[in-house]
Amino acid sequence: MEKNAKIYVSGHMGMVGSAIVRELERQGYENIVTRTHQQMELTSQIEVEKFFEEERPDYVFHAAGRVGGIMANAKAPADFMYENMLMGMYILHAAWKNGCRKLEFLGSSCIYPRMAPQPMKESCLLTSELEKTNEAYALAKISVLKYCAYLNQQYGTDFISVMPTNLYGPNDNYDPIRSHVLPALIRRFHEAKVQELAYVVCWGDGSARREFLYVDDLAQLCVFLMDHYSGDETVNAGTGRELSIKELTELVAGIVGFRGEIRWDKSRPNGTPRKLLDVSKAASLGWKAKTGLEEGIRLAYEDFLRRFA
Image 1 (cartoon, helix red, strand yellow):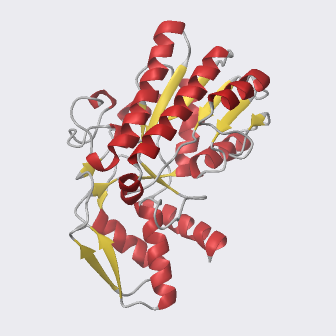
Image 2: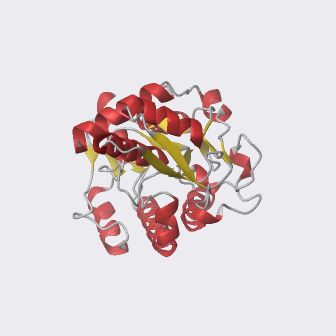
């Protein structure tokens, strides 16, 4: 990407979008175009097409989306599918129609089958059934990913996609209902520490295994892929390392400073048993995550304290 190119980042107020904007600015890009939710409704085709006709960005990072953990997905699967599907379809269609030179779509590792061989390669997409607890969200992301590939095949666009593992870091969502596991644990343990609670209850039995990527590492990869990758198949974004939810919970509790008991509610779902990405494709292109999990959680907790405590 040329330094003076016009770049649109959707969802720039969110964790991923704001990290991409930070990385672009760090690398000297100055012509960055953004719109808040109040300025443009991404589920409105009329508003999206008007924006692209007026601005005609050269490059697009589509990072906006409705996101949440197991509870949020269970409560509103129709909303998750509808909003994420419309945002993706409208932005991709308008970008193609208005001559966008390259677009990058950000999805999620939940697009892969529930029982996919571990670590999960990009090629395992649609080889078996999805995890039911986030199926609606995953189907929306898969549809937009495929639309990228179909536009490339039919119209010769240069639209790519990247599938991150579980993300965390600055500007994360700590809402009690809609947050993902790591920010939810940071908030829960912080509040328990402040309130001097004797114990904290966590969902499941702690056996599920997960991988976590610091969001600024993802942002670096996103900009890197714009310069170094083209293709219909997605690119996994992760660390290639995993740990159990029990291990994660104990790590977060220690960093936050909660010294009480951790209890497990086994009546609650664990989610997918394992979700580790094969990151050899990104590595072969020359990228590797830099931030260790303990360091990243400390940085995330510092951000939480600045924003909420």
